[in-house]
Amino acid sequence: MIDIGSDTVSLFGNDASLEEIVWIGPQPTLAELGARVGVTECHPFSKLEVMIDEGTEIGRSVHFLPPNRAETILKAEKLLKIPSSDVEQCVSQELIRAVIEQRLLKSDEEVAEIEKALEIAANMHILAMRMSRPGMKEQEVVGAIDGLVSSQGSELAFPIIFSKHGEVLHNHQHGNVLEEGDLVILDAGANSLTHYASDITRTFPIGVPFNDRQRQVYETVLRAEMDGIAAIEPETRFEDVHLLACKRLTEGLQEMDLMKGDVEESVAAGAHALFFPHGLGHMMGLDVHDMEGLSEDLVGYGDEAERNSQFGRSSLRLARALKPGFVVTVEPGLYFIPDLIDQWREENRHAEFINYDQLEGWKDFGGVRIEDDVLVTADGHRVLGEPIPKQIAEVEKLSST
Ligand SMILES: [Mn+2]
Image (cartoon, rainbow, N blue to C red; front, side, top):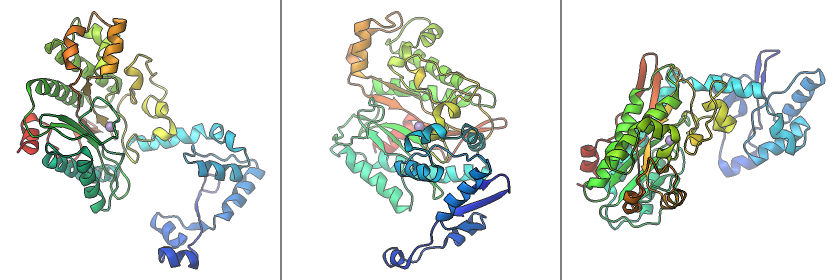
C-alpha cells in the first residue's frame, strides 16, 4: 500500500507457519522480504482491511489496478466492500495512467535485464535451428527449448510458437512431423530472473537451403523488418513504422507477381493485410505485451492516437509516438492463409491490388515472420541483445549443416 497522505509504503502478508515450513522449508519473513525492496512497514495481511477502512472512514479514496485473477477480484470484494461484479468498473484510471507513464520508459537497469532475457532467447533459437531435422516431431524441438530455459532457472516469457504451419499466427500445436524443405516459424522468448521478457521470431528451412519461393518471401520480410527498425527514432509514430513495413511487404509481393497497382494506395486500402493481418509490434518489458493487462489502448495509443478499424490495422497494438526508453518489438510477417484467401477471392476484395489467379498455387506455403526487440534511444535506436542469425546465409549455415 502506497499512502500518499503520509508518504509511507507498507507490505502486507503472513509469515510461514510451522506447518507450512514442514512442507516447503524455511521461508524468509515478510520483514526480510520488505527489506530487500526498501519497505520497512510490514504488517499481517489482516491489517490491510483495517487500514483501508480507516482511510475510507475519513474520506480518502482507494486507488487500485485491474485485478487479473479471479481470486484477487474476490479479495478486492471483501477489502473494498463492493460486489465482485463491480470491481472491474471501480479500478483507478488515474493509477493505471500513472503506472503506464512510469513503465513505458525503461531505465538502464531494466534494459540490462531485458538483454539477459535475450541471451537466453538467442540460445533457444540457435538450438532450434541446429537440432531441427527431417523426421522429428515439432514437439521434440519445443521440449528441448523448454528444457534449455528451465535448466537456466528461467521460465518462458509466453508459450512457444513453433510450427511448419506458420500461417496460423498463434499456433501452439506441435504435433506435425518435420519434413525436408518445410519452413518453420519459431516465436519464443524467456524471462530474466527478475521477470523481464524477451520476444524473438526466426524462420528457417528444415534440412536443406531455402527454395526460391521461400527465399523471395523471406527476403521481403527481412527487408521490411530491417527498414522498420531503421525508421525507429524519438517522435516517430510507431503506426508510421508499421505502414512503412507494409509498403516494403507490398513491394516484395508485387515482385512475386502476387500483388499489383500503386503501392501507397494499396497500403492505404489495406490490401496487404491478406498476407500481413497483424500489427508490426508492441511494447515489451515486465510483460511480453507490456502492461496490456492495464489497457492495450492506453499503453499503445494513449490520448494521442486512435485505433484504425481496418482489417489488419485494427490489430496494431502500438501506434503512439516513440520516446527514448521505449522497448518495442518489430515483427513483420507474410502468411498464406487458405481460408482467408478463399474468402477474399470470393468477395473479389481488393481485386485491383491482388493477383488471385497467381495466389492459388501458394496456398500451401505457410508463413514467414522475423522479430527483434528494439530500444528507442535519444538519437535513434539500438537492437537489443547479441545479434541472432537472420541473414539467409547465417540461418542456412545453422539449420542445414
Ligand atoms: Mn512479439
